[in-house]
Length: 412
Image (cartoon, rainbow, N blue to C red):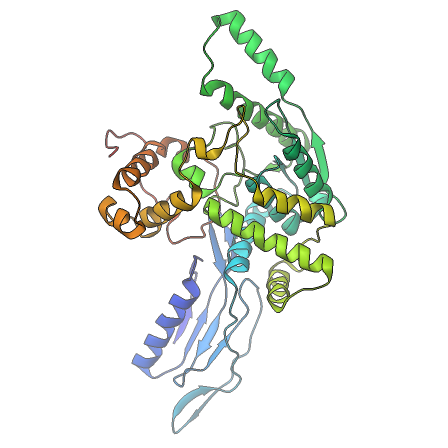
């Protein structure tokens, strides 16, 4: 059997495929040759891992994420067909698998749309740190521009962490600073003169994000770099983002990664950078570097001591959009460990679980589950206007997976 395939990647897809292979070979008693696509196109990513399987359970599987050619030799004896030159499937650690998938999607979307460089806002927070690392890992620091855009609500730590991380990647990335406070004050003065004094609300918070989006758009138009958006799946699900602000961009490599996964992948990049700096790379680190090199032709970008320390502090601090005094994400959202467990059961189970079932599965209050469900539905109009990003999970906020109307009275 020969299966010429284009099977898009999602988490745990490789194990599922192998089970299908084994079932078909057992049914037919003839060997299977499976050829799969490699690379990214729009919001889909293909992991390759073309393979052959014989009736004795022997595999010859190519490396994932890597284009190539393999010659498979088959022989037949009294026991049936068997592969003469088997090669066991490569087992990938969960972190490098997700990281590589997102990076493949990022690379191929940017290049296939005619861009050579990217730009993003580096805030000192977790999401922009991860996108910044992905961009440097994929394109090299010479093809990445970071812009810090502080206001009076931006902490000194945020400014410091962003600059230390950017300057500490490889030979040092370009980090530009464009303060937003003066633009923000000018806008509010003009608004008050035109419409009168108004009570402060979320509009003032959103304005900061929108001004930052304007700066990124101007830079993109001026220098021809694609803007990378930095919102994670948790925020996108709950609408915890600003239209025409932090949602602005050409591509978002975090679009299908939950906030808890963002922290897990930052831990992964911190471990790789820290161990390499100390000269104490583990076998897991070496395997991860080899997988990434197979896909991209080079290893993950090195981090200096300051970047490693800034990354550690970024991971350890409470998440905040820093759009108001003392603001934390937990003021507006459930704790991410709680929220992501609810969202995962709500979305990645192919939307097959009721609220009661999710409450039972997670042991969280039913009222909380219903609140999350209602907000996810209400925020469809925002997701519709978000930029594309790579599918990582079984169900992503992309057209083929997620088909919900923007306009609906049905909320609960």
